[in-house]
Image 1 (cartoon, rainbow, N blue to C red):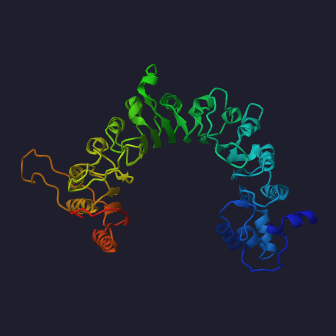
Image 2: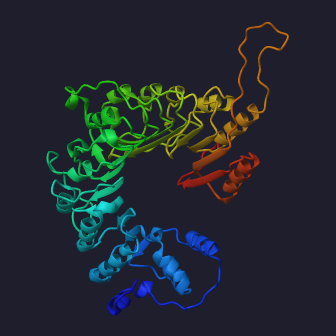
Image 3: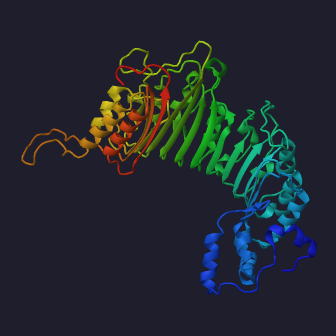
Length: 492
């Protein structure tokens, strides 16, 4: 391939000159070295130590391998342009795209503040070869490139779109009328599209996008607030959905009295992450969801006001799930009001307790192997006792939890792991008793402990670490802590 002198100047970062001789490796060894070295995308503007540039400067033979291997030029990331001329980057991009050949599929990612000229060139010239596209677009560009008169995406499988207010990349926050405000006609018409990520934080309802939800296997609408009715409509159509991330904004029950929800089954869904905003206002959808293949569930909850939460609303949801559920994460957040006071649980009961009642919530999830309770979700001492004996969650292996003492959690782990080594109790081999044997719990092999405590100092921290080391957990532990200002409790 020959290049003009003008291109040589533009392509300083990917110079075509190289020494004639270099290491004389056999062809298969040389190819293996280069394959292992070139792993990341082609970054534009190119960084100083780009592996393609470094290898191309070894010798002419190495340069020929780098520039003629199409697979090294199929993943592109356009970084934000700071002090760069878009024209130069555009000419460089044209050359590097040519190195990918004519038929091989391309994956392209745009950062914020990328010149519209670059976006237009890529989408107009290479939309027929795109299998993955990630970009920030304004609403005008959304209409131009993805609307009814936009470009075709015959091979597109994965798309990640974020709607911004301007080309500087600021996410739009103004509410936009839902009907007809977003038109993704060309995305809907992409025959192989299976993975969709949409960042539209202005409450545009995904149902108005008219996507073919029945084709998709991965959907991420975590930054696009939806109403419960919209979420349920998506679930009704998602016959092949395997992974889902959704943000559900619950309104007061009186605002949706006319809305009725039918029982909906999502047969193939294995991983689900829900960001729930004010879910205590309306819990009806929890009674209507059926997910027979679900293995991993993440529930992130946001409420305004009281920090003491009634987690029993999750009981209905988990009770409808079945044996495959293995991993659950609870994350609780709240926005304080002027009258809200944050209470930490104290073992001496000098302040109001905020232990969440997890026993009834977790009991239906009998086969859990990992449980992650984000900071602020505290386990009641009686529930810790059931975990220690294996009465609750007998197959639990990994636990993340916060505590204001830490020693209650360490006690539970020690007792549970001791119980896992004891023989099962029950009738002897010569006995005719019909007493059911008591099964041993599975030992915990990993602990993530977050301690919030008054009076924490280096000596206390070292005691915690010594106690954690003494547990001899096969997969180790993570210990985090935050000292709470104030006088240490008498039980610390």
